[in-house]
Image (cartoon, rainbow, N blue to C red; front, side, top):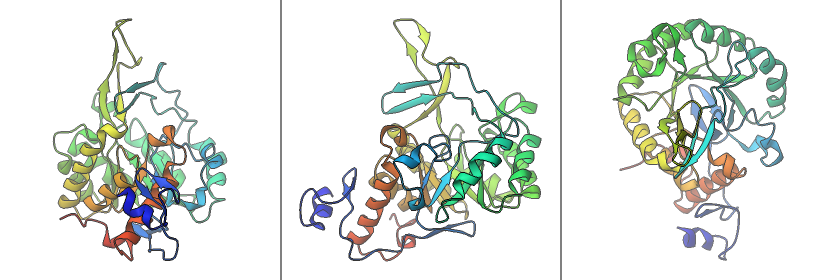
Length: 331
């Protein structure tokens, strides 16, 4: 693949690269627009919540106006301090984190982050919403309804449901149905339920969200893992367990996206281990309408733009005029 795409440039080193896909010729540009829940995005490359903040720090490396959307870090109704440290550990093929959704709360977010993101008029704003009870989520959703610049709400249902004994909303189909249905009563923007992979059947969860009125789905969230320091004989993360992200989880994520795409009619934002344009293209072929780049932002702050250029080069190589020619095209 590297050789074929580099030949578009006429040499072996031309253009920006993402993995083995180079940017290629700029003579013809395919239509990269995609639509999720009635919202049109200029391209399918977004950021995964929790890995990009609201883009302030990454703005030094990435032209935010080139992204399809910035998906913000989780926002709660009140400030959350997060989990005790250490909260991050490197593992083979990725990382574990147990940040605990630390965030300054909706008031600070509305005052500081929204005005910053509104500067980038070509890039949509998707806000990730978290909470510990249904009412927590409702409070944030209602506040965000006051801001027309917010295009979509991504609902993080991996947060613990206190009333159900700290079981995540996203791990029981009836709990997922109930919170989705309730939020639909209050949301002014489309809601996209972020599904947890830590379930027996991901399609059961997807169907529950669809039946409750969800407008879109995003998947996958992190996979629960653990690391032990054998020399200190202690857990590497204070929380003992953490969410695993990074390239090692990509095959699982692609499989789940494909399964969900076959099970429901909702548009899907796919994520999980995307490091290169090739990775992103797999998700699109599996049925995702767009993709989010997560842990790779920590390794390569230019990853989102390189992946965007790689998708464009791939479409030129195979003479695909529009992104919809690629979505769900696996045979």
